[in-house]
Length: 223
Image (tube, rainbow, N blue to C red):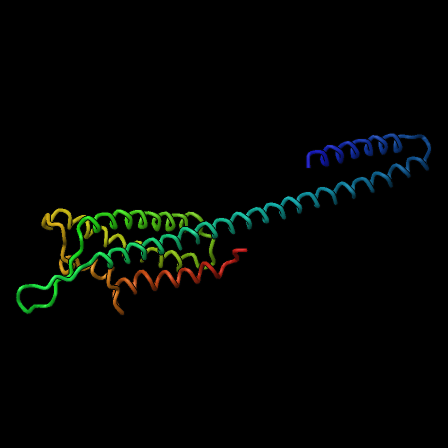
């Protein structure tokens, strides 16, 4: 690009010198030729300047479109990974639950190994932080998605759901007994997350929000 600019500037300077020589000539015909040549040089210069401006604007818009596409792809990748990580934690928690039958005829008590609870909550905390970053990015780049506000609200719901789950965990560490197992009936938010029955907060505020947000992201141009 620099070589083109230098070549154009050199050619333009030479043309201006030639025009100046011609229009100062004592011969009227030569002066007229210089005048016509001067007009032609001016027109070519104007067209070249306008063309250069338009080309720069085109390149700027193309680069911006490319940057937006890469941003959307990166956000989509992080978003899907966050959801998959949360689902993985849920399955591992559910697999580690056990049903202990009391001495009387009351219903079985569902318990979870404390060590597993602590490990999985640590992983979910990382997932929640990833969703916080996505929310921040959606706020910082308002033009990245056509339905940015709706998309952001859905991700906020998902982040709030995990935040409530982590908050319950933080309280549980201080209040629950120091046994190897913890009872799910004392942790309603964890129970909702693990079992995720129809109509549960997990399905309403996490799974459903994810699929709606995913459709919005995929509706954008990602190619």
